Image 1: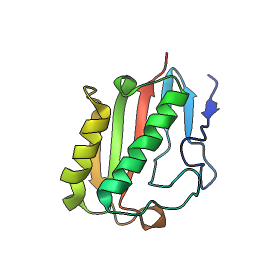
Image 2: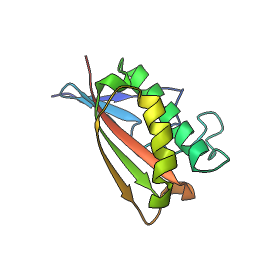
Image 3: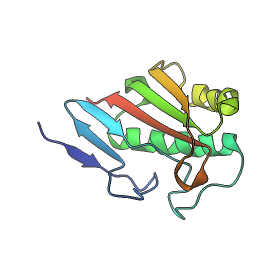
Image 4: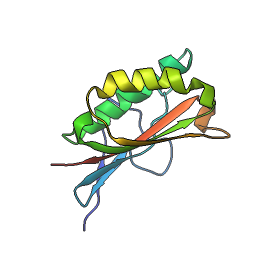
Amino acid sequence: MTVQRLHTDNAPAAIGPYAQATIAGGFLFTAGQIPLDPVSMQVVEGDVVAQAERVMQSLSAVLAEAGCTWADVVKTTVFLQDMADFPRVNEVYARVIGEARPARSTVQVAGLPRGVLVEIEAIARVG
C-alpha cells in the first residue's frame, strides 16, 4: 500500500516533520489543525470561536484538496484546552459539517501547540 502526502496552500503548512494529510488504503488522515492563518502562519486573534472557525476552514481546505467533503468524514477528534469551551466549539463544528455526522471524540488536554485553545483532526473516505 502506498502512502500519498497531501498539501494545500489554503491551510497552514506543517510546523514540524509531518504532512497536512496522508492518503492510504482509501482513507484521508489529516494532521491536527490548529488556528493558524495559512499566509502569516500566526495564531488567529480572538476567542475559541474565532479559533474554531479557522480550524474548520483549514480542515475544509484539506478535505477539498483530497476531493472530499464533510459528508466523506468518518471520524473526528477535537482537542480542547478547556472543556468549558465545548458548547461554543460545537456550534461552529455543527454549522460547518452541515448534515454530516461523523463519529467524534472530544477531549480536554493539558496544552496544545502555540498555546491555542482548539485542535481538530479528521479521517475521511477518499473516492
